Length: 435
Ligand SMILES: Cc1cc2nc3c(=O)[nH]c(=O)nc-3n(C[C@H](O)[C@H](O)[C@H](O)COP(=O)(O)OP(=O)(O)OC[C@H]3O[C@@H](n4cnc5c(N)ncnc54)[C@H](O)[C@@H]3O)c2cc1C
Image (cartoon, rainbow, N blue to C red):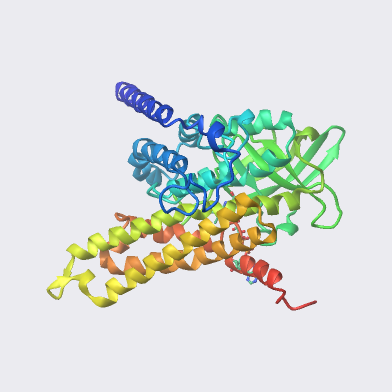
């Protein structure tokens, strides 16, 4: 057994070496010098072919990541899904060494210093991983637990937490939701009470992705008794401190390879210098952090393409009533409708991304909202619609479509339920009933 493991490790190292050869050929890290400060516009000569926002560099980055996914992740997905956990430290180290965990983060903290469109390109490529759990866990590391730290954290804090997270040496998690507070973030109960130069933390968090493996948590806690939108702070909390208890790994209907934990804090003492930005600004920082999280869900688009393609392949060879399932007009028309909706959503994504990198005021937030609210119904429609055409096979664990059916259901719930997002759009439209 030890011999076998040794051989596997050697094999893995050899594969990684090949990968690094490839990335250095493509020049992943040097991309930051070439393109980071240049605005990307649809008329830019750098934009590749007829693509709206991606340049040749975006495609090179995507190609490097795709090779890594095919060599280091996809071969193990079945095993990790069955085990209910993927080895986050191992996978993040591979991704971090190649620069994929900090694409738009500053180079001084190990990032590539590229603009947000490169993060979207990377997130899109992660959709080629054959499950939703691993892209989600990567998203927590890159776009959910770290944006506020990168933007508002001190240099000291960034060195201690951001740099090792981007390099893949530390696994991060985000602690916002609690047993009594999910959609209504302002009603969280976890408290961090200042005593001398420390905060003493009591309370608990629920649904924490990466929670069973994380080295630190970006924790949202009440640091005063003031109004609920001004009494919260984000704190970098090492998970190995006395009083941090990872109570249980939650059994879910989908996202199996991503561990989800419940965590309790019992008189946990953390230095006050671990606060991100200003005390009392945590709610605002978290709302900003949620925006990046929403665009990260782009990972689902390539998965949708794959599901449609695999459904076409299956229904083309599966015969009923003397002809392929696909030849029934109801089937090929429906698949055409679904593909059309995926393309519409992709256009909306690129439009939102373009606005993010050009910082077009409120339009930015607005188009992100439209994009994310369109994503959920399509994911549900597409996963249910395609699964139907697989018949009994679609009801087994053996096919990607059934995994997608389970995993994608989360999009309407996690990181802002559909109703919460609609509520925010209504606020912009000024259609909410006045109190
Ligand atoms: C697999 C998984 C991973 C997660 N990872 C994390 C994580 O890493 N960190 C973290 O902090 N949290 C995480 N979450 C928590 C997630 O963000 C919450 O589940 C989500 O915000 C919804 O909160 P809730 O579950 O408490 O539902 P509730 O807030 O109780 O809402 C229940 C339902 O009420 C409805 N609803 C909500 N608001 C409105 C409204 N205004 N009008 C009408 N109806 C409404 C919606 O249908 C909603 O689904 C995760 C959750 C899951 C399932």
